[in-house]
Image (tube, rainbow, N blue to C red):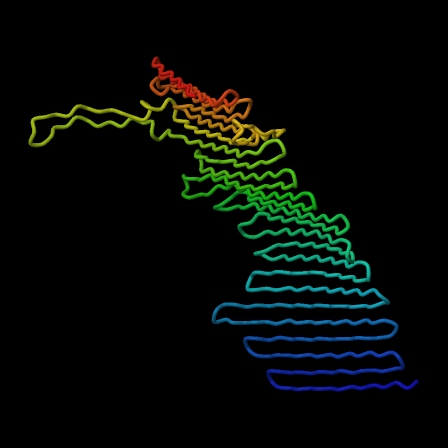
Length: 449
C-alpha cells in the first residue's frame, strides 16, 4: 500500500530572534502518525533564552502521543545586581490500548537567582479504564528558601467509591518543619464518607513553638461526627530579658444521631501566668437534655503583694502633718495565686411515662420530668454553691439551696427553700425558705390553700 507524507518547514532568522518549525504527517493504510518540532531562540544583552517543543502522535491498533518541552534562559541585570538562570523540561506521554488510557507527565527544573539555587522534580501518572481511575503525583522542591515534598494518591471506582491520601512536608526560613496529612474515603454502597486531616508546624527564631490543626468528619445515614481541633504554643522574644509564653486552644466537636445529639466546644488562652479556659456542652438523649458550662481562670498577682507606702508630710497653709500610710493587696488576699472556677449546668430528666394529671376535672396537664440547675463558683476568697430543682412527682415541688464559704465570716451564708403544690385534695401551696447568715436565722413558711 502506498504511503502518503505531508511536510512543512518554516524558518525565521534575526540577529536577536530565531524561529524554526518543522512538521510532517504520514498516512499508511489504517495507520497514521504526525510529528512536529519548534525551536525559538532569543539573544539580547539582558535576556537570552532557548525554547524547544517536540510533539509526536501515532495511531495503529491504539494511540500513543508524546510531548517534550525544554526551556532555559539567562537574565542579567547588572544595574539592579540581579542574575537569573533557569532550565525547565517537561515530558508527557499518553497511551491508549483498548479501553485503557494512561498518561505520564514528568517535570524537572533548576534555577538560580544570584546566590540562591533551587531544583524541582515532579511526576504525575493517570490511568483510566471503564471500572477505575487512579492518580498518583509526587513532587520534590529543594531551594535555599523552601524545601517541600508532596505525595498524592487517589482512586475512584465507577459509581462505587472514591478515596485519596495526601502528604505534604515543607521547610522554610522560619518554619523548622511543616507536615500536612489528609485522607478521605467515600463508599456509595454503604452511603459512608470519611475525611481526616492533620497539620503540624514547628516554628523557630524570634517566635518559636508548635501549631497543630486536625479535622475528622464521618457521615453515615444514621450518624454525623464532626471534630475540629486547633492548638498552638509559642515563645515570643519581645526583648532580650522579656519572653512571652502563649498557649492557645480552640476545639469543636459534634455527634448527631436520630435519637441523640451532642455538641461541645473548648477554648483556652494563656499568657505567661495568666490563663482562662471554658468548656461548653449541649447534650440531648432519650433520658436527659442538658447544657453544661465550665470556666477556669488563673492569675499570679505577685506584683501587687508589695506594700505601698506613703510617708509623712506637712500640708501647706495648714498646720497639719499627715501620718505614714502603709497598705498592700496582701491585707485582702490570702494568696497571690488567684483562681476562679465556675461550673454550671441545666439538666432536664425526661419522664419515662407521661400520664395525665387531672386538676379538679377542669385542666389536664401532661406529666413532665425533673428540671435541675446547679451553679458552683470557687475562688480563693469565696465559694458559692447554688442548686435548684423542679420535681414533678406526686406533687409539684421546687427546691432551692445555696451555701457560701469564705475566709471572711461576713460572707458565710446558707439558704434552703422548698415550694410544693398539692392537687390531690384541692389546691394547696406551701413555702419554706430558711436563711442563715452567721448566727442570724430567718425561717419563713407560708402555706396557702
